[in-house]
Image (cartoon, rainbow, N blue to C red; front, top):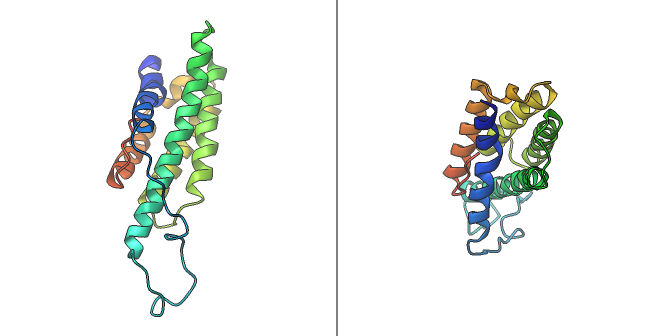
Length: 162
């Protein structure tokens, strides 16, 4: 069970993110999609609000992918160096996922499905980090949060596989 959880929560995204990182670089124009404080009836915008929200959600998913990749790489480096996996290693990864995903979610729109998914995943990762046994992540609530996060990111065009 622990190996399945480790593989699903940490190793698979590393491969997916590595492939995603090799894709074409498209620079987002943050100033063009920045939210406006002017009256919407007087402002002109080339992108409707829904498109701007989707672009923001895409950036949230990409940021979460980057964090996940970094945490996974740290764990893989330790394991490659011959260290045996310990509960502390998993707690470090889950703590990182919980805190970083919460930070990323806080930058998004309150009504965003991606923000809701990031928040739910962060909460479940926090519970797993607080548990003495790393197998605490192997539960239906964590699986559901993972699936919801994957689906929310896929809906905005960011492939993830946590």
